[in-house]
Length: 70
Image (cartoon, rainbow, N blue to C red; front, side):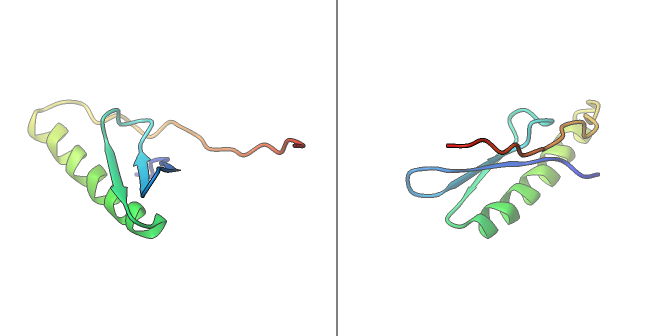
């Protein structure tokens, strides 16, 4: 499965979330570390859903960029 993630710059680190998996978040000092941490968080989140016999939400979010003039 391939889930969209959102990485945002915070005051002193980066934070990531997964729109299709509410509550699945991670932080890191760099973007690369944050990507690694959110990948692990997704795997842990899905394991928890399976353990609780809950449905696994299919990936459905799409990411696009739009250009605007500043």
